[in-house]
Amino acid sequence: MKSANWPVIAFVAGLLGGCGSSKEDDIRQWMVEERNQTRPKVAPIPAPKQFKPEAYTNGTATEPFSNQKLTQALKRDSAQVAANGALVEPELARRKEPMEAFPLDAMTLVGSIVKAGQPVALVLAEGLLYQVKLGSYLGQHYGRVTKISESEVTLREIVQDAAGEWIERIATLQLQERAK
Image 1 (cartoon, rainbow, N blue to C red):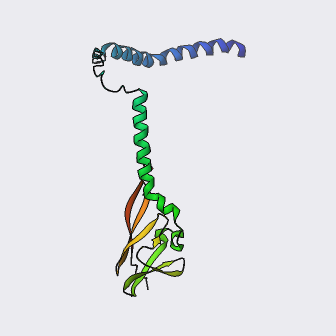
Image 2: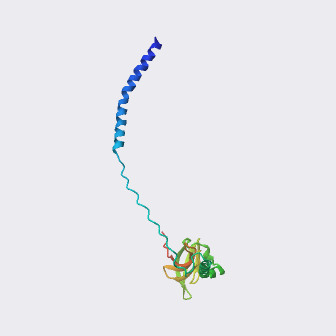
């Protein structure tokens, strides 16, 4: 008797399954209608511009890819490098001073005095006090002291810019008050 019930159960399940699909059919029919009614609005692509080749009319000038043009550029670059290197070359040939071992931001100006009629700055670096005169070197960028006042030391540094060229810049070391 139990085996006779299986076909009846399968038949009833099929009928119930058929009743549930009417909502899906409505949604599918609506989607098809919307898809058919919707038309995309795409602007047409403009036609490409016509290429017009130009003739090379500057035949009397040096050709851009000639050996003569390359030689001129190399001479110009080597002259610039020589002039550029002349700025730092004297600095490389001299003996380094003790204050050039410290970066400028690791130094502190703690005061100034006048010694034998000349201003002298008192600079603290790594716990040691140094006397700095005009013309002395400070920092790791070939910084030479050009001015000493009561509140700051001005120096001229030689550094490389982003293009690798040596340039001069002005740096200052200002008097720092200690926190109590």
